[in-house]
Length: 438
Image 1: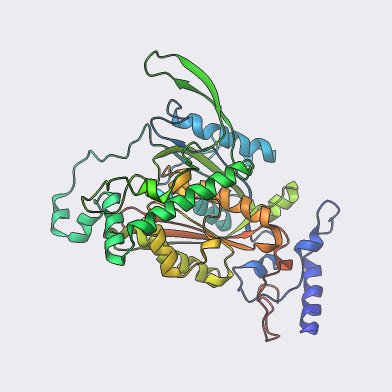
Image 2 (image 1 turned 180 degrees about the horizontal axis):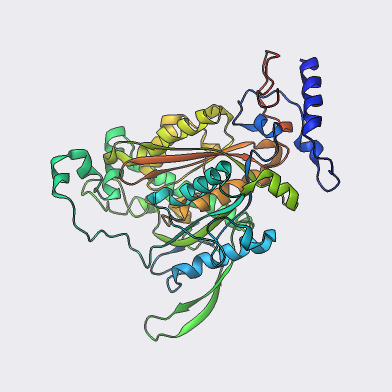
């Protein structure tokens, strides 16, 4: 083992940049035994520039639609402050950004419903890996005040002949009821999950944990009766209810089924908000002297029965984790979107995940779920929490269910000195050198 590591150190010396005065390359280029495979932590030591890294991830506060802090804010005015902050806080020249930022570079939109923000991040990562550009921004935006997501179009008559096609049109609350009924998730379990989410989100807010990820937005509140405008700055999620209790939630009536279990209290909040994630090649980040917040490892999107679309994370998470060369036990933190308590509880139990690792600062049941924003919001929340935990946290996963029968998940690694972290798995064999190094 010692000879192998010594040989690896010699090889790594050939990869070390000639001018290392401004960077701590010793902590980044280090020989180690890692059983996670080429796509995980060890791969980073092989060739500079191969990794796609996140150097910034920010969001607005999330506010209740139609009555919260952003009810009178135009959607583009939600995203603009976040994009501006991403550029200003990193001093990146906007003209270097290969996608998303306006004016001198192009913008495009992506739609995978509840995972759109995460899909945008994955698309940018893929484009960077493909060599289309070196820097890109994956962003998410949703004003559910402006866009209530109501379908008013026509439907192909052929859909009526296929049950699964019909199920794609089911209201999401009905799919929540289907999950609860089919897998025996009780009303009490759902209400308890909601209480836990609010409790954790309230504690995180009180401790200032969201301050590093939230960009304050200067906007206005319009009095609906007088039309008077009041200038405000929104910097706190306004849907969190610290005093929520199971007994209080038990009083709420089911919304989607007369004898059902899905209520307004154990469903995600309809919200407004925006988020943005700045990605680039590792070599570019190092050249610019930017701290690396996280490393994008893998992304997976899967199909599931649309009638129980909420089970998506239970299928997508194992797929993404396996693609990263990891096991579920290797993951230190999970951000699983709480679209409905029913599907969140099912996915958690189905995968046998440690509740102490999931949504440690609360989730959508408390913070909110602006559909297009959620993926980007989760990236910001996950990576900043991983940074706070330091050596005790190496790998994180983001996942969500998706309307019409899908699930998505992505694996991230903490950005700094990962090879020296405490949870590198040991291997018995000496044959562990990366094929990229040899």
